[in-house]
Each structure stands twice: as structure tokens, then as C-alpha cells.
Length: 244
Length: 244
DNA sequence: GATTCTCAGTCATCATACAACTGCTGTCGT
DNA sequence: ACGACAGCAGTTGTATGATGACTGAGAATC
Image (cartoon, rainbow over all chains, first blue to last red; front, side):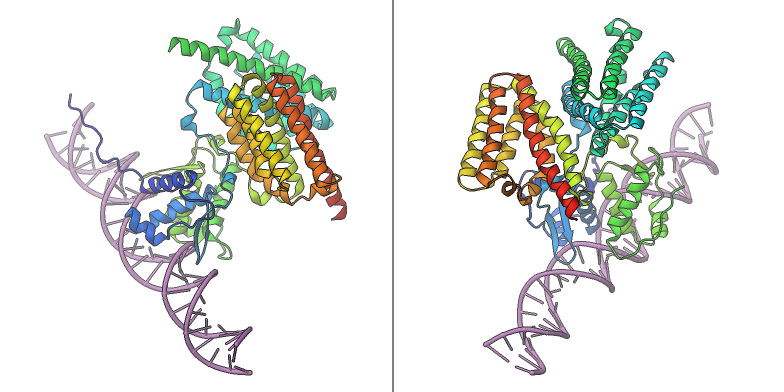
């Protein structure tokens, strides 16, 4: 067997330059407000064409790290903290990372349930109830009901009247759902149906607290629900560590 | 069917095309996995040069909305949910938007305080105390202590042992701080010193609850603290609406 | 039937040119 | 002396043509 290793990585120049500049900014070598080298200087320094430089700067601009002013130059954004809150999928490999995200989610969702109990309209409460039914129907059909589960939580977030909760939950949901399905948790909880029944009971308590306009109870029910699944994952993580 | 309308050179072409494409993706007109029009087609449809098209695509790529494959084409990212959670400063104009962000923050910080009370190390508790002192020193020097205030909250977030809390708070802080300084709230609260004394008293309660390992009390104290400032802003917003 | 060759389509990069904008400077009119 | 202003150099924004690299699929070959 002949072994050939890949030669010239032929890495994308634009991506490379973007990362170089982003690193310099985030590490403070390029302070906020500081001016970036001109395009001409960058082309000479990086030995690339202006196209590459401009695409790299465009990427940084899209991320909010720099602002450009025609005829003047490109500058590091004054408030780098306005850079978007993003979770790098590459750094999100271990179960511990997932747990970190879930804890963050817990805080947001507890508040979401509380606000929903205070503010939800009749129609919105009806919507939460409908989402609950959708979960039941899906599980009875033997499906995992992952989508419906997220839908339930989203309908609560919508009932806060604060769209930021919806946006945040959609964002977080993208990271949690996939793992949820492959975790194989149900089997550990004494059977699939029993597991889903327990989840649904937790859901029902949340719904009823919101329906009955009890913010405190809604927060507690949501906290119990999410703490529960958090602990189930923590147990899984502990075992994985032991096994690995 | 993707519909790209020609761009008017009134604004920056790249930015405009980027937003058009991003809107189509987020609105579902361009489904995940779907292929974008080729560069040539985009130049014709938008009546711009390839430079503009390539920079726009580079921006979308930086945001994680599309992936490009040399020799094949550009495709909408399969998992658009991985798009970063960002708050567009342009849509963050009204005081109501700020309040929405503050509510989100409240949920996270309440949980942060609770977890800190459970997990903070001796050194971390010491750090929170030091942050408290820093606030006092700054206010006594007649400064606004905005940075120090954020530092206090960040030191609590660090004590959770979950770096996501720190990241999130840094992110959110960037949006809240500026308004904090220009709001002119202190004058409404019966004098600057009285206002700061009240804040500091709230801070102290949070600190003591964490130090004494009382998660429930820490959550309560943090909730009281943030609910307080939230309500102060809500009052301001109501007045502004009335005046405007 | 399998392998290799060829080719058209596409993105990646390069090089050049011009347009639009900004900040400064030196000139001119008063 | 001094302000208005035209011009200039520098920078980013846009346009264009050319070439390289890569992919997928069909044609050609064995």
C-alpha cells in the first residue's frame, strides 16, 4: 500500500487572512479604534491580491469587528464587545460544553416561563396548550418529538412578548437538538414510554402554571424540568468520563 | 425561485446585496442546502461587478449562512440555526428594545448568581468582594463606575465555572453600558449618592448570599437588583412615550 | 466493465484601471 | 491677515479581463 500524504494544503487565502486579522484584533494587538493597514500594505505584507484582502476585510466587517470608511481607511470597531455572541461548533465537541450551554438556556427559560405567566394572552396560552398536544401526538406515534418539544418552549418564549427570548431559544436550540436525539437517554430511564411520560408531566406543570397566571410556580416548574434533563446529561457525562 | 433585484448605488453595494441574500435565506426562500445563483448570474441580476458579488458572499460565509465549494458553487448552510446570535445595533433604537435585552440578561444573571453560590471557590469569592470594593472606590471618587459594575457581574459569572456565562454577559454588556451612562437616572432617584448607595446595597446582598453559599438567596438578590433597574428604565420608557 | 481523458462550468486569485470620497494644503480673493 | 475654495494625494469602492484550481460528468480508450 502506497501512502501519499496530501501536499500543499492550498488553504484558502481569504480565510487565512481573515483569521490572522481577527486574532490580532481579539488579542488586542489591534486596539479598538485603531486603523488597519491600508489595502495596499496588506497586499504587500500578505503577498496576496487586493481581491483577497478586500474579501477578508468584508468578512471582518460582517462580523462587526471592523468598520470601513471610504477614502479614510478601515478601523477596528470601537465596541468589539458588540461582536455577535456565537458558539463555535468546533469548540463544542465535549459533553461538558453542551452542559454549559444548557445551563445558560436554563436561566433564560426560567425567566421566559415567569414572564409568560405574567403576560401571555389567551391566544398564546391556547398556543402553548396546542404545542403540548403536538408533543403527545408525536410521542404516541412513536416519534422522538424533538421538533415539537422545541415548539413548546418557543411558544412559551413568544408569550413573553419579548422577541429576544424567541431569538435566543432558536439559536440555542440549534446546538442542543442534534445531541438530544443521539444521546440514547430514554433507554436509561426505564423505558421510552416512561421517559416521555415523565417529560410530558413536567411540561404539563409548566403549562398549567402559566395558564393559572402563577409566575413563581411557572419558574419553578421550568427549573425543575430543565434541571432534570440537565442532571440526566450530567450523569451521562460522568459515565462517559469514567469509561473513556 | 430566487429573485434578485438590481441595486441602486445610493448605498454601499456590497452591504445591500449581502442583506438581500441574507434576507432570502432567513426567510426560507433559499432553503438550507440550496445552491445560490452563480457569481455570473448574480452580477447580471444585481447589475454589479463580480467584486461586489464576491465580497457579499464572503460576508455571508463569515456569518456562517453559506458555504462555498470551489468548482461547484455556493450553498446555503445546512444548519442555519448555527448562525450566531446577534443583536443588530440598527434595530436596537428604542428603549423598549433595550428593555428586551435587559430581561434576557436578567434570566441569565439570576442563574449565574445561583450557580456561583453553589460553586464559587474561595479565591473567586474574594474576587467578587474585590469587585465590590472597586465599585465603592470609583463612586467615592465621583465616577460612574460603569466598568466596575460590569466587572462585579463578570466576576460572579466567572464563579459559575461555566465560561458561557462570561461570554454572554460580555456580549450583553456591550449593549447596555452606553445607555446606562446617558440615561440620567441618578438624578431621578433622589440624588446621585443615594442612587449609588442603593445599588451598592443590592450588590452587597448578592455578594453575601454567594459567600454564604445560599443559591436561593443569591438568585433572589440578583433578581431584586436587576428587576429594580429594569423597572427604573420602564418608568423612563413610559415617560418618554408620553412626552414623545 | 473499468479506467483514463477531456471538457465545460464554477469558484479562487491576480492584475489593472477608474470612480468616489476624505483630509489636507496651498492658493486666491477680500 | 484670514477665510473660502480648488486641487491634490491617499484610500476605499467598483468594474473588468485573465488565469488557475477544482468538480462532475460524459467521451474515449483499453
